[in-house]
Image 1 (cartoon, rainbow, N blue to C red):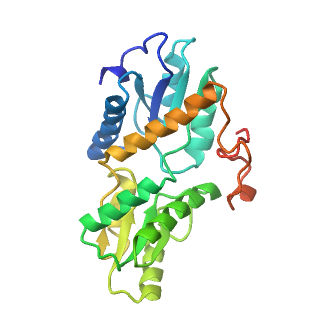
Image 2: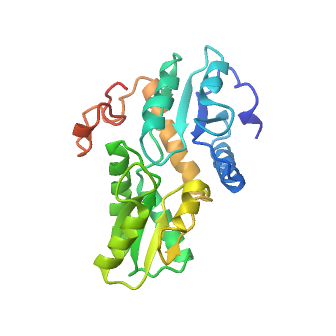
Image 3: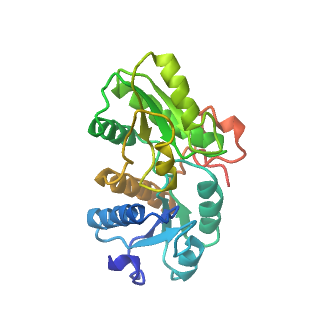
Length: 268
């Protein structure tokens, strides 16, 4: 994947910086590499660079600093919801350089719910079984709202009940959600749907949550690369003078509980 390491070609479309959290898990690294490869295959004319906000190199700040001054760039968060990395790390990196914008994260998107349903089926989970949608978690209220929107779509795809649980920084925890789901649903089986991109620390913890079954993470899936490209295209339109996301305002219930909103055009 030469476009990840070579200098961006002058005069081409905006550089796509695929920014992931980073992980020590070897399989997780391979899955994220495959997302970038999928983006390149879908859009051969776009230079795709890798960057991370934690654990791995190259660091996003260094990638931004290395770009040619006259080349526009879009940071695409390979993250499932808003939160500190999107609102602070990525937003600051974008603001540090003219001609650079941040795209919205991958979620919420109904296509993610369809992948979750597919993973549950692959794990042998019956459509009527109770499910806990397990996300990494964030202290940002809008991150929980992102997960709630995906939960609602997943619930429409299933006959069994679906509730949320979080790995950290939000409640209920995944183990607490499993206990509550088992008590409330009356179903003998409670499954955890791993709302995580790839194997890593948080996915490993799901095996300890007390569920009967844990589905695989979202990756591998070509759909993730497709969503990343859609986010890139939306951001390129903004670079070209188009409307910002949610320029008419944001009516989600979390808006009143956060100081900044990536979906309402409010400066971060």
